[in-house]
Length: 301
Image: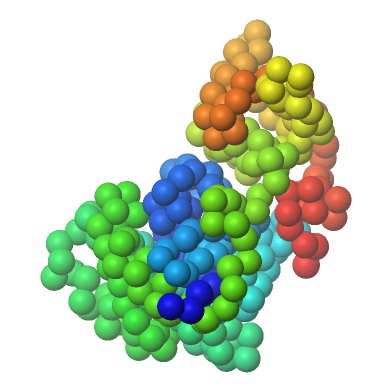
């Protein structure tokens, strides 16, 4: 059999479950996941071998109405991911249904013929374990009227229902061609960026309100020791002094807990001992700086 390889973009509104589905299909944690919307900021690639095919799954930021330069860069990254892909998966939270955000994504997918519509689009209803099956058909019909989708799949990224069928179909659908990465690679994400992302994940999980959205993390140093361990120094930027105080916590308790959990996640993923050192700095307007956007893997729109 001829080898196959193709890029598949996961596209949708925030909190549709794109990162959870990507991790489920990859069989490993490649993209960070939190209950909060807009967790994913840059495109993340998962490399998934499936028979003779290599599936290059691209997790894109959720699409929403942007305000900051950071927001515009995130939305641009999502649409560019769809434009560059061989196939786009339009992921919809079946429980939330046809929200205004889903309507906006559908309208863009339908209207952007030259940029996105020329790519094959499949509709994927996610979180089907959260509602009764009779409620799914009207949603499929409503979405199909808005976006010309080649195929429809119903899955639960949380339980795995329907995911194997989706993977099999993708393996048959990607074009013939050589594999672009070694099959034992999980992602093309550099370890430095992976470390920053896992720290940011803990910030999302352990802080509330504006704090997660007002922070960014950059790995300043990533050095391997003679004993095989790795020493990582990362800086967390916030926009205001009071955010820095909240993130550090009384007696440094919160930043220690963020570091402790991120270190454990990194050690498991890198399969080695990790020494993680975090520094928190106030930097007003970091979300409007081109250098900061590039540091987290985004192009300035």
